[in-house]
Length: 105
Image 1 (cartoon, rainbow, N blue to C red):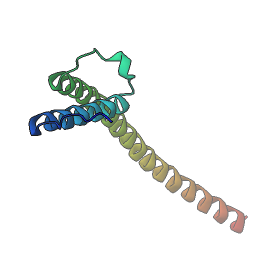
Image 2 (cartoon, rainbow, N blue to C red):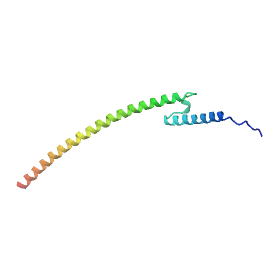
Image 3 (cartoon, rainbow, N blue to C red):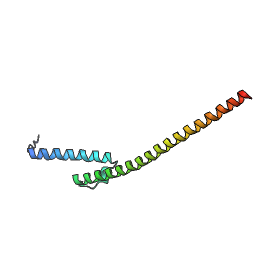
Image 4 (cartoon, one colour):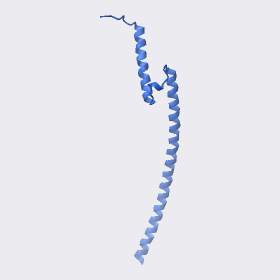
């Protein structure tokens, strides 16, 4: 049986870092819906940070767009509520007058 020399503490740390980096890349790919092969071979932490910043900017733009739509929808619904209230008051007055007409006729 062949015995291998023990790794030094630095080599063990390097292996641990490589393993953690590979896990980080896997999570990054999953979060960004990418295949590992779509990334360049030697991706660096700087590359990951730049990609995350790009995603954050896109999400902020989308959030702003939906915030505008939400605001417009809210104002439209408030307007319809007011108009509906006015229409209900008008209908109630007309119905009340119609009932009086029926009772007196």
